[in-house]
Amino acid sequence: MSETASAPPPSSNPPSNPNPNPNGPPHTLPTLCSSLRAQVNAFLQEDVPTERLKRVQAQTRISLSVIQEALRRYEYVESPLPFSPLYSHRCSARWLTGSLAYSPSSLPTLSLSYNGGKDCLVLLILYLASLPPHLHLLPSSPARSPSALLLPSIYIQPPHPFASVDAFVASSSAHYHLTLATFARASMKDAFRDYLLAEREGGREVQAIFVGTRRTDPNGGQLGFFDRTDGGWPEFMRVHPVIEWRYGEVWAFLRHLRIPYCELYDRGYTSLGGTTDTHPNPALRREGGEEGFRPAYELEADEEERLGRDR
Image (cartoon, rainbow, N blue to C red):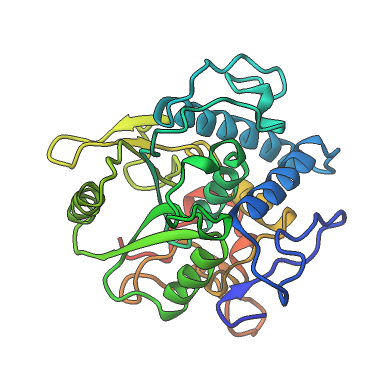
């Protein structure tokens, strides 16, 4: 166990590890995506024991359908996606087999905003699980080696970042094959503007960015699954596949699928920002004379998620 990543305790029916041989050769992005796809599909077919996990299954299906729609819009899918009763949303039944057809000459215009937080992790896992039909579109070395495939993404580093968050972002982005462009800007608006400009200068026109915003986040109340940026912002489509997830559902997904996460969550932090404005959540303070804080996944109330944030 590293000092910056926590592995949740095994569930009663633990799924396979996305990298079953961590001491062996690194997995390629296609191998990782196929493994996560199988893991997510197994979860969706599982007879789960709790009502919360049943809600997580429903949320997962919705999020997958949003991701598929984004891929249809921005990856130049040649044929429309049919309705699938499997997800009860407009989503391809061929998600399970990866048999969709795409134009081999088009480059991806999608990117991912990733900061190592719990919501971004859920989004990232579902995005990766949706990618096997799309991997031939991703940028790689001139040799197009599977080991060189990378997922375009941006990390907007907050002022005064936690060292453990930066370390987790670095290790997880390497594990999940992200080509992470890091921007330390006081303004998210400026960070996105500089990122889009850098990508454009590199020959890639980003049209949409996956964002892990949820309904209870600041400014999340009026958002939908697809929202163009507001006036004065650099223009792109914000895609919010996990917008409707509740706090407890995020943790149920991560723990049930045993996805490693940043160690700060085990110290009582429930929403991660910078060192000057983020503290352990007081609602998780241990009682009965014990010192410290309970882990983030023990918090129940959505409205208490940001009690450890100054803003």
